[in-house]
Image (cartoon, rainbow, N blue to C red; front, side):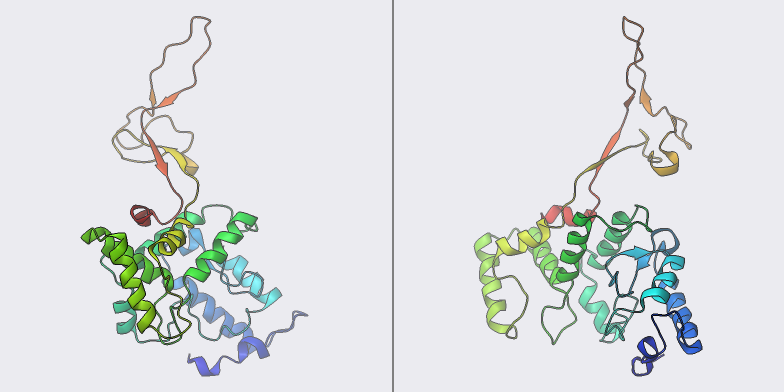
Length: 269
């Protein structure tokens, strides 16, 4: 379906629930496409383009369909940039986003990690602020490119790390970018601004018990298990009872500290 024929998104939807057959049919096509190629979409959902969620919150298919029927699509979303479409060719897209550090996969990891909560619940105020910041970070550097500000900054920080570049060197490069990029570009002007952008993506650590042999983690449906499903090693250290006969709190043999944000971005912060 071409971009030009998507007037149905807004002409065929009514807030009284009376939608045209074309709207219903094409919305189902959109949902099929949105969930088809996204990793773990049935488990973690896909960003919802309804007028309230605005591509900031992941929903499962049934919930997204209900949102679109009740609220309609967000204004002006005729190019499905968050659901597999880009204003550039696939080859250009791959060149722009396939970095040596796999930033495209890194962002996918972030999506998987951030949305393990109940997808039907409304996000907290902190989560909404985080989503807004992430959305702003993904805006293009300027109106002549599809490269996002977050992508450019992460790539620059990767180069800094790989080649041990000094703060002075990075600042001079950013001064050069400021001179040659179009007016009103969104590239940070100093190393501090780059670090501030990435540092803002930090979230609190979560501790998760793991098998001593790294076979599995004790999480969600496995949270209450006391031995590994694979190697059958005990989850906990054997602890003697106290002199008073009280049972001590079990101590996990191995605990992972997990930051529910883009894991591979941590080394740049």
